[in-house]
Length: 181
Image 1 (cartoon, rainbow, N blue to C red):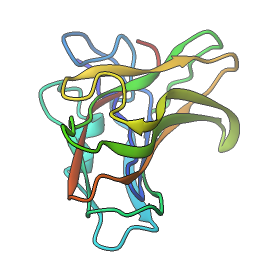
Image 2: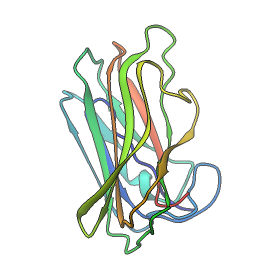
Image 3: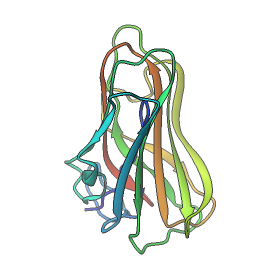
């Protein structure tokens, strides 16, 4: 099974590097053996729990991006995965298996997930996973793949999720970060 999740929400960012595996929330090619790190910005009290799960090759475990109740100022989080020794060619499907909570009343404002690819430490491109200006992101409440097709080769991926609004603590789960789904 391959670890391939990445997400950043309300000031948290997750960057992951190539993995490999199969199954329900796993990648066709991923970042097994990669170094995983996380950081958050503009989000007091936000954190990433279990960051290693984003690259453990087990689609049943998840890194959790935990955000405090947010107001109108967007916050973001990052998980980074590098050093797997794998390179993916242009045309690969980059992204992550993630689960965003469904907020029944009010929804969020400006929620988004994107993926930045790198090759040899140099940024290659930014791929939009999904976004919405108001309400819930597509697929909220269920585990689904967010991502898109790369046009350039890469060896690392960074997932960034940002959001504002909601008015309550929020947890986003990132199951696997994928180099090629």
